Length: 216
Image 1 (cartoon, rainbow, N blue to C red):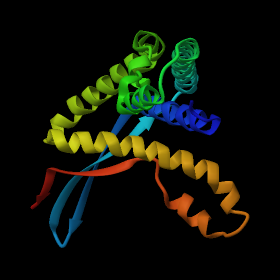
Image 2 (cartoon, one colour):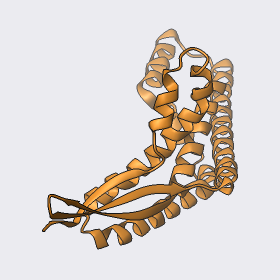
Image 3 (cartoon, rainbow, N blue to C red):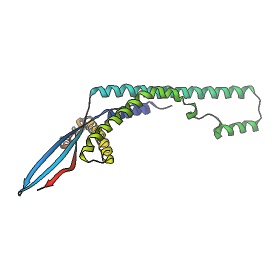
Image 4 (cartoon, one colour):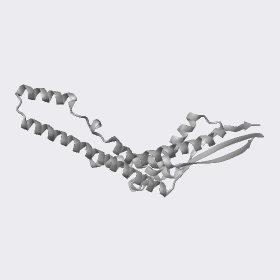
């Protein structure tokens, strides 16, 4: 049986993953033209960020709670089946007279794995019902957001691995912003160095393209 701390950690991890999968990527193009010593330099930068709505949090919380509740029910079912198996063995041993050698042999067989494991007792169908909302929405939104980002970035001659890395960086950017907003006020009580860190940190990723880089 999982501890309460493990359930809390599982709930937080599922909620954060669910929110990251729902983040909508945003892209802003900024072109710059500079003239230095009669030479014209053109450059195109993309500011890649994310769009967050409070509805993402509530949906993530509800689906994660349902997921964790399903894990808790499955753990209880495993413990119930295991307890019933042990009771049956105790009743069998109590009503039948066996020798010491037979008792040693039975104990050896039990330690060799004759008793059903936790995975064999795990109610997979019950777990599938409770985890399906979280898994379906997570995979669907993750795929749609990546496909949307990939469709736009293809116009800027970006390869598929670069788009995948950029998609992960957008999600890490959200986690970094969330961490800064949580621990920032507490760190300000001890040091003022965190002020410059949060002030200089941008909520977008500056992606440089070579599409319009040209010097005349």
